[in-house]
Image (cartoon, rainbow, N blue to C red; front, side):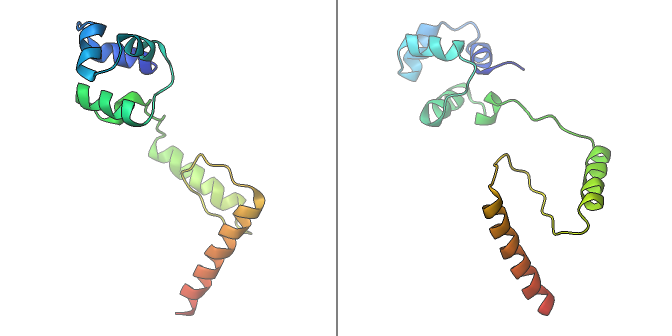
Length: 119
């Protein structure tokens, strides 16, 4: 759909930068620089823009590429096939963990599994 600045300009429409900046109580130069940037501002600036234009904050983010259900099923089956000999946890996270942290997480999960199995 385009980067942040393009989305912001689209929302502004025919209104002038000056009038929108005054409504938002920010300098016109700030609005102008926001419309030129590709990155998304954070915090109160982003919230104020979303509130002013009556859009969800998520409007400014690109939607992730979605896979079909069949692709997802095939991917999960591949995980099961490739990792049958060890415990595996799949998550939806972009965070990267070092091996020590991963082992700590795995140990806690095994502990919970074992407690559940005893019941």
